[in-house]
Length: 410
Image 1 (spheres, one colour):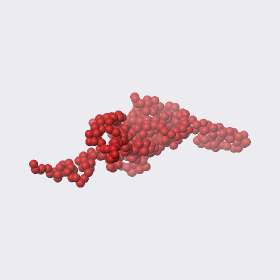
Image 2 (spheres, rainbow, N blue to C red):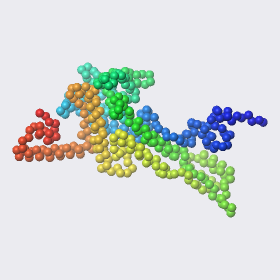
Image 3 (cartoon, rainbow, N blue to C red):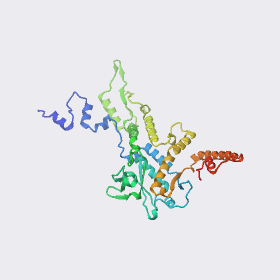
Image 4 (cartoon, rainbow, N blue to C red):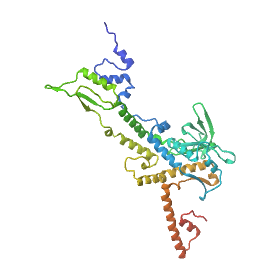
């Protein structure tokens, strides 16, 4: 019977010629299954995550969420205090009612926590805070930054006021429902990237490579644990006077079928005498854990925290952990939280009243050492000042306050 098979027709439809004996079968199969072959035979090019899905990575990558959550928790631990231009605490103001009950479901610490998480993911955070009569505000609700669209005025460098740059905001509840929010009813906080005044680039974009490697590391470990198992060769150990006796085709077929039917942790039992030749590296030799540690360090550094705030296999002494927490507060958490409160004070109209909302972290036990040092220094200065006055050294009120560390007041 005449064979009318046309190899070119097969190639035009399936991208391979299975009757071309000059190429390897595995290469022919790769061509046939492309682009799905990479899932079976291995990816040959680097695979990077899509940084536009920041919240998805926050949910799926534990190393990222752990750092962001710890930063948000530390920022929200500050106690809000209203002070005047001279640093004196203001006891009576409508802002305290807002702090006591910002919205029906959240405390003030929850609000700061949410703003911090959004800032960590998108370098910007939004809160709906409508202005009431007499410029009073009694509601503040953090919004998901990826659901807020900024409506720009188009007048950029010619406008120095915020109202000249932004017309309004559009918040999307879902794909079908959205709401327009006026500029005065929205708090818009930005962590600048040094270039963009509005809509700065997210830190997640700079973490594209370490986050991709972490996901790849988890995938690799899962494949090793669930699918591959041991990799190697089962070879015959039977010998006679002429040398090694190979397995018969039937013995090979029985062992192979038995292998496929078993779970990865079950033993193979066979009457054939076989020897095992491993063809893989131990997991520790792949250095997956060292790679993930390096990637985690990159995330910690990006958010200005300290490695000793997180779980450590070694080197985590009590002193290291305590110093790491103190450094994180003094170098990152306190300055960034003060910046957040300063921006809120400006947008809430407090600065126009000569007031400022500031976070107080002095109640934290880990920072008590700093407060003790200040008190000791103050005591020593007071003793020196007392001796100077007893010796008749002339000191006016301004010098007196400056020497004790107070703001000069005429």
